[in-house]
Length: 116
Length: 117
Image 1 (cartoon, rainbow over the protein chains, first blue to last red):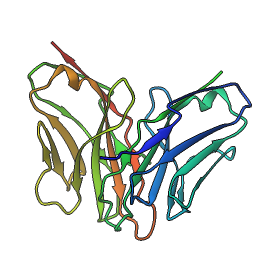
Image 2: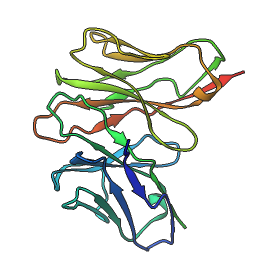
Image 3: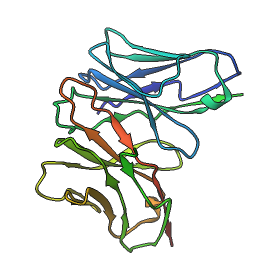
Image 4: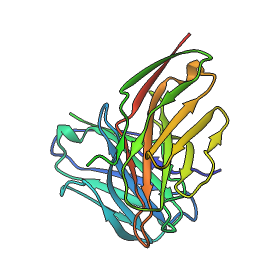
């Protein structure tokens, strides 16, 4: 079965550079979530999209932006990278919520960003 | 306030024994879901088990079961017959129901489980 695809899997950047992460959700999933997991930390919610519109926003820095495209894939753009941005970035997708808090979020394998 | 609390930073268990990983949660929403994920050292997030707030019975998935005590707001994960491959970080997470909105997952800090041979 198709899973959530993230690219690139690994990325090395210098401070102050820009990085773009891509996420391709499971077919027919129209909700996408981005999470950031620092070393030894729990995943922190960044931002989510439903039907190409931003649906929720978490602890996403102003230097970061994201969008969901017409084919439902999403991109997370990170500018002016800092050492503290080094983390594993997860994308997850799901079917639209039914207001019950049920339904699994399917995670991609993550993109590991290292900022030097 | 922390919505998901995992009080055990690390746990050790002997191979073939059972182990319980604790999780308590905080919500005022009547509709919510509780999830457990396993994260091995390779980093991927593996879904283990789900419990809905309206489910009458405790969820089970193979060697995994969820001890759901709604009044106490706890959702402990029980792993029976531990295997060496169970060594990993385990995250408890909650998804609150939100009509028309993002039902994001909120994670606990995690418990690192080590299975000893």
